[in-house]
Length: 265
Image 1: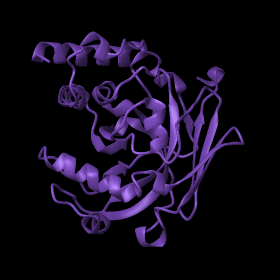
Image 2: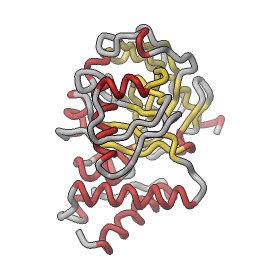
Image 3: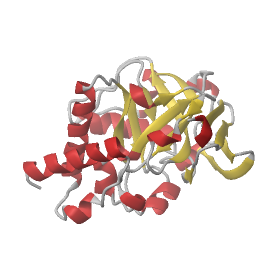
């Protein structure tokens, strides 16, 4: 993909954020789009957001569970950036109009006590770097029409990032079994799905190690205080104005995303 096309693709995605109108799959418009091109397009958008005053507050790993890979038709993880503008308070109303076609998924969020820099990061290194975990709900969104995405499409679109809701009770890593921690996902009081932490690459910790090493190869360090979302425990579910979604994670706690009703916005 030539630099001019990459710049144009980034501009198209930025325009989708501004207008709320999704675009056609980039892999349709640019058939030679590679994974490397897609990450370059992602970084170009992040640079624009930073120039506008946003701050990087962490990273997300996506497509780590078999359920999400089946749902979106991909076969490997990806990553995106979490900006301060993406974070919402537990239980506080969220303006659904900020998103184009939102879905939501439960995760176990890591908060780092100290920097974590790859390559060469081991599970032991990752454990030593984690301060605590929190229950989390990630709002994923796509600037690609009808979620018709390939791996390269979602990478270019900042790994389909939208928003994050974190619980507010920190739990020490040694107080929870990340693999066996069960999850109940409710929408409007009805149980929608269940899962366990082991659905995320065998353990959410493996996703943290993967991210640190992949970013390290690019000279990027995971910083102290940053949030890392390791991937969804269940398949993502769609949300609409008025919906209330709650994830209950055994040994970790509960987190709620409350989407404002249309008339309240």
